[in-house]
Image 1 (tube, rainbow, N blue to C red):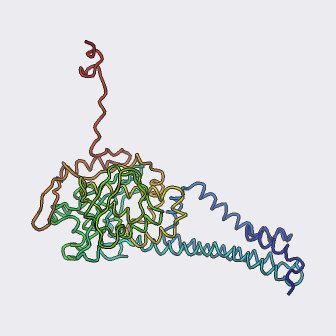
Image 2 (image 1 turned 60 degrees about the vertical axis):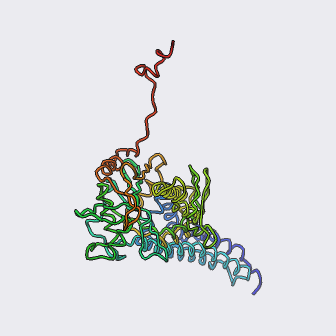
Image 3 (image 1 turned 90 degrees about the vertical axis):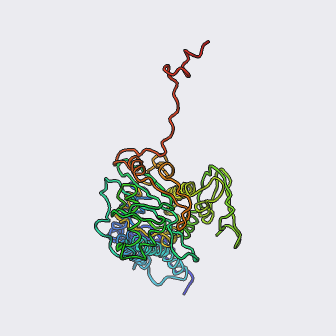
Length: 464
């Protein structure tokens, strides 16, 4: 076989043109009817894709395709498009107008073109398959403690114009613990009409929390989920639902869905987006922190200086977990956990990270998150989150005077006692009807405005 046969360069150019746009190589070969046949479906598909990209934010577009059923259709379409492009390339290269066999140069050129065609489709198929498997795992839906079991009708969510309340549970799993504790308990409430969100954290050491069925849970709230899972005769719907009902009864709102996060897996999410940036208002040093991930083995202690800090996954975890430094507590730690959550949101939603860092983000999500949030709610929620600025997100940590220190209980240790009526009164302002702006808590002190009626501030009384 000669290195270059007559026509190698033109047939390779035609094949390359059809690799870019099916039918373009046929046009080079003067096969106009075939050029139209190959090009029209491809151009129509490109037009649809361009329209979707132009009219939807990256977050909405991503959320629209992550459901396993939609992703399955896209994976099939990906294979069809690949076959179409390969057929167009081969037809352009082996057109009968080229006499004889190609030389080695033509064969090498064809091979390079085919690799260039197949490679992106292979990457897309790998990403899509990972996304399909990951989101099937994340959005498994629980009825009680059995993954994959359908959620009861009573647990299903609100309409598209109603406030949506999600219980976010940070699970502290350690090899030496005898039980899995909910280290972080917060409610994220989204108003799709006013496009606002309220993030409210509850102390994990609350005792005497109402269960929503007339009963009260005496031990600490952070042990309820584990206790309910171990006592199905008392909590037939399982631990997650029991915690949802208890938090909902305490706040006086329905909890529609949950998102359960493994705090140690969350390290992967932070690392997958390149870390997070947090403006630390007050530095601290916790000499008792276990040092996991940030210190050599068995070395305790971790601290942070005030100012803008860039945290990797383990540092973000330490910032979220440390609580025994001077001036720090479960309440301040809850506020820091909210800061990390919002910092992750900001990093994911900025600079196209949701697309460019997709593989690592998917793996991390699959490792640590489970939720019963329906995937058909994702596009709207993603769009709201993408369009929402920081001023539209209200953060609150329930504390005094809504929460009273109960001292040290001989059985449960340090406890906090909720004032249920006061909490529910504040919750009405934090979770108002859709379209009504939530009121921050504690309510900021108003700035005094000088008036003539105020003798201390009036210019008339300032003169001698």
